[in-house]
Amino acid sequence: MADKSAHAPSDAAGDPKHAARATRSAGRKMRSLLLDAASPLFRERGLSGASITDIAAAADAFPSQITYYFRTKEALFVECACRDLLYLARATEQAALKARTPPEYTHALAETVTASDSIAFFAEALTLTRRRQDLAPLVERTIERLHSEGTRAYASQVARHGWRSLRAPDESSRRFWAIAIGVILEGYAMGRSPEALCAEMLRVLGEQAKVTGDAARLRLVDDTSGNSNEEG
Image (cartoon, rainbow, N blue to C red; front, side):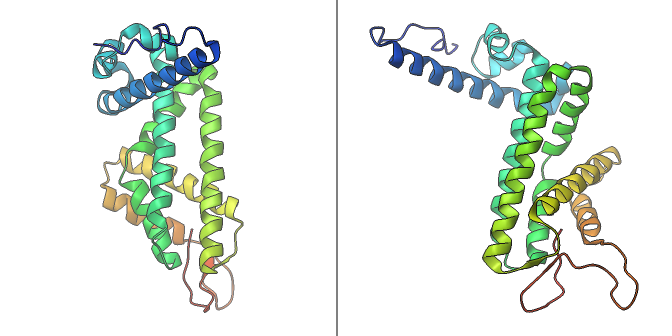
């Protein structure tokens, strides 16, 4: 039934380095299987509703393997949420690659993040780490990676299309994810649809600092042609 390869002796027992590599590979595979099985159960049932036994059964593993690799169900929950958020970030980047104008870019970002429940899932992990500070470093690393990869993706698009950005790429990335988290959490609490969440995100992303005079809003990204396209 279960994958016992992480605990089984290697066929190449005479080669310690090979055996160590095989063990690490089997361990990574089992961790991945457990995360794959746990994530949908946690999303559907929450932390308290998804038992270690159910997760192990879904992964065709033993309950002891969950505690071996993750120590606690709470640690598994946080790692699932962190991984899913980074998967969402990657999907968001891929969707935005097709954009040719700043409005298309902004819409692709907003539509992708609001179509998923990954941010709401991650917010539950954030709440959990308030009581489990031993799990906070994983969340911190996830947020740092989220921003660094978002910065890289945005800077690449600006350079690729020749857009003029009034914000540095790292500031734009942090702003986008801060707005996404806030809008989505508020929307989930109020029962808003993904379409409503997307519309609200686009509205908030389009709002800029008000200035006096003829200009109604500060432009963030323009095409090189000088069109008043915006990107958040």
